[in-house]
Image (cartoon, rainbow, N blue to C red; front, side):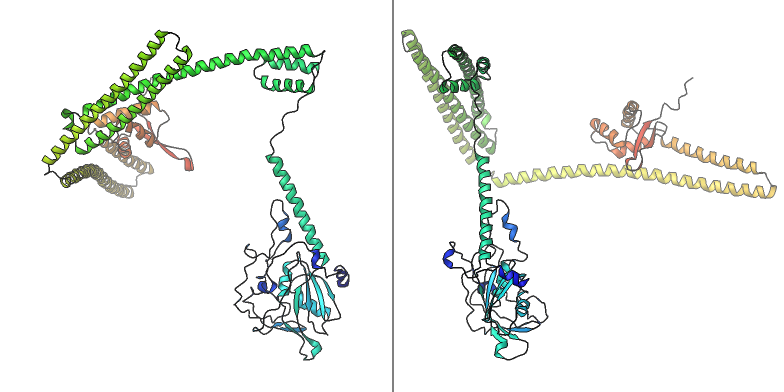
Length: 624
């Protein structure tokens, strides 16, 4: 099989003039220098060269996908192959042991072996300097650790050509260049030789590389075609040929405003094609007449749009006039505020803000007035152009309107100057007052502000303390009630226990029947229930305040409207709208104090379990 594969190598030496492409790949020695930390190989079958030189698990078909630029995995700087180390770093090669031979590295002081320029798609290496007694099996044993070998062609002159399955395996084989090969432990000259591994030019490699390049070119052309088709503008719709039926349909389309633009293009193309003759002249004349009638529709449409534009201009002018009047009122407010009567009562910061606001509003007012005046001038110019200055009365009106506009502008400017003068006077008076009141400095103001802030915080803390104290008092009263109930129940239990003891003794002495004991138990249970009812009545005897009575009335009304009951959160959210200070706990305690009016029920199962309160005041009333 190896011999049959060797026939596929053909003529290995190809003239370099046949290659039209310059390949600038790093030399094999620079690539092999990446393997700096390789340990010596002592076990048979162990990898000779580390995968750090080449791309680990490189898939040659990866770059055949559409739209991906072909990538040479041996180009440094792309991240696939680490860049070669600096040339001044010396590579320390180790001894490599195989089953039938041993490889000794060359002297590190000697220059590295030279290699030729790498051919494109190179998968074949030239191996020279082999020992005379080296067989094909020994060569395969040494170089099959670099990768899968597809063919070995050995010559009688101590050299051979080896073809690998992938391109990156060639770099591992180049690493062995310079090693001295010794067969077994023999010192005979025929059993030793210095290996020289170099790139080889093979027709099969170049043919496969050309096939890949053509495939990539086809994919690139296909991708560009798809991109051009995507970016190409859509072609215009095809125009049908002339016929009497199509002409009748086109005449109907010309009368329709929505389809007129499409129909007029078809009519134009028919006329340019030369479809007009004696038979079709009348039909084409009627279609041209329809196109002419569309002119009137267009003019009417233009007139309506112009009218809408005039109305919009008028509305804009009216809105602008209203805005200007409001600006005038705002400026008047600021001017009134800057007068002496009101100005003295404002603080320094307030005066500063009022002055800034006044200046800003005056600037906006002036800009609005200029815009309004510009609109009026444009209208006057349009009116003068339309009338062509024929009648002297119109000229007088235009002059009067222009004079009125100028007078209005001068009046506005005079008012603004007067207001500025008033503002300057007010500022001078402010400066005088500040000089008189030098004893009040900014430090005093900041201290006053700090004192006010502290007073506010103290008041807030006092209110919080009062609320906390009220809550504590409520809790204490509840605890006292609970303690009283507990002591009362304990005393009652003691009495019952004593009664039970006495009854047992009587039964033992007098031998009473079982029915007497049952009666005694019934009496004790009735006493306990009566005591509980008394406690409940004591708890619900009286209300503390009118507020509680009012709350009971509101809650009763709310629960009467909700016959299926309501949870405490729903009830609290309703009551909070009436009294924001009330709490859910307070409402629940009030409901628990009145068991004859309100009762608590559980609805739902598991995670949906919910407690609801219902109104039970009407359940005790018996209707006849």
